[in-house]
Image (tube, rainbow, N blue to C red; front, side, top):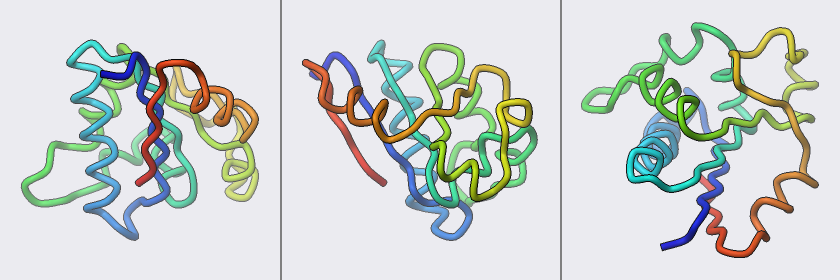
Length: 120
């Protein structure tokens, strides 16, 4: 098993099943003791904001806000710099524990020894 799992989620409410899968895999990995770095890009960027995950609904899926909380408790969530800028989201707007960083940091994490990257 990889020492670190880097997950980039590009989907939000526009593709709810793909979005939920990414958060579910990240939360399960965290619960399994895997170091997780979840990247929010595209429409998933909105879930970096307080209350937005609670608005997401998908039948037979774990509540997104619960998954976000579990990932933040033992993993890392990063909002893409460009995605944040396009949506006028600043560091003052995001949930506590969410950072904003760019492609250079994503590539660095994804290419690190022992890392496995997934994109949803």
